[in-house]
Image (tube, rainbow, N blue to C red; front, side, top):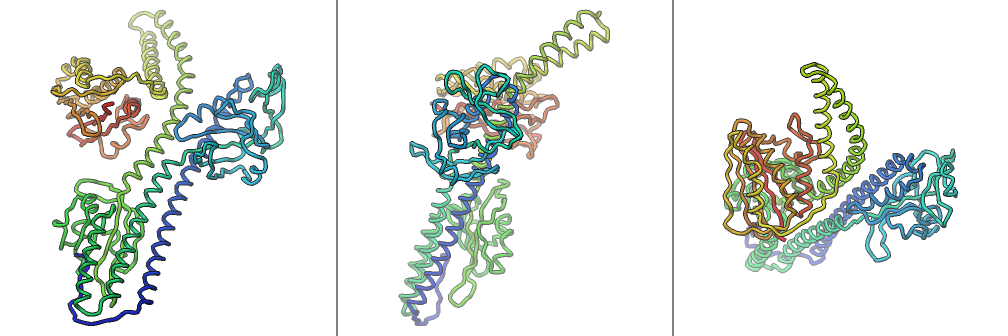
Length: 591
């Protein structure tokens, strides 16, 4: 039991007004804390979406500046750029309007020239050169987080009307009529007559916010119920026997409530030893109540308790403090910790209570958003850079081949030409991987047995394994394991992981491949090697583009693997221990 009744046989009476006042204070405190927490989550959501919208606008303006020459040659670069950006996940729409609210360019070509927003509403929004935001709805009723500001791709410009035939007089924007297009002139006047609007999907953040609100309400309700139960037991207690019975009932009720809380709870007794753990606390810390009860929390949960110990002993309340903890081999577990001391009606210390929740899923969501934004920008940049480099590479290789044929075998000149040819071919392979990474994954899925896919892929590396003295271990699963995949793209994933494992085992070793069904998840493929392993500081970066631990690696192989697995709706994870080897876990849905 967390709470224990006094053994003194004393009759007492308490004023109902005092109890109601105390209950009102508790309720007010919980309401204030809940409102603060909800407002903080709303501000956090707004900051992230505003920053995302600002990044999209700045990227759009950078693309507009980069494409200025194309625009002068008559290509509708701005409209194409908007359509490309608007296809990214999380973007509902993107438009550029004039001072009257008419659409000049947008992701929907059919609406160009129509009114997007009233002039009076523009005055209310009061756009500036800095990004602003508002929450609005589309015509279909969908909620939108809208970021807007003046559109400023160049330092000084304004719009005018020009004839299509006068290609040197203006830069075209969008056709209107048969012979007139809207364009831009370079001018000395600062343009503040165009506004760019980006509509973002706030639903992922709102879902997370609703979950936090639900947890906050649940915690507050539980705390309120505990306080109310305690006050109610005092209010109706007339003597020792009645008070004892009511307190026992209240304690049982309190234990039942905190046991099923979705967050971890640790309570200590008067001596500072662990008195109670709920189910969520046992799951997060991987320590059972029987192991921890009667022991000091500094010994059982040092990484959790020590950061808040001093504040609790001084009587301070800890509210939503984020710390990194370690529990039985699990390192860097992010927790949000709150705690306070418990005192009785005489002001005597009864113990401490600490509430904590795992922030792992929140951090994971944040990391996925950052990664998606980074990969989207990198993909667009990669496609443009690769296209521009490949053409001159062909010319360089041609000249190098020409010069190679003009020199005799064994001469330094011919060797130099061969080096040039080899380096051009290596650079061309790097560009090929770059384009593969930037290109959207087009899958031709069909139902196949994963056992057949694995057998075929392992035949392709049989000679490589044998030449390096590596033992290949594969035992076909006796069950049929159907998966819905693009066999060619999935071969690419497997071969990439096989070759990485072979390179990690220069002095021989063992490569083990196995497949199994996973309830509710699909089929899991595990690829293990006994190579040199991956350092702990690098393991969370291996799927990032251009990160590599190889002297001649491009850093795109595992990034492409990750992209293909995600395109299949699957998941890929890795575990490794330096000097002992590495294991990749690929989970693919069955249908």
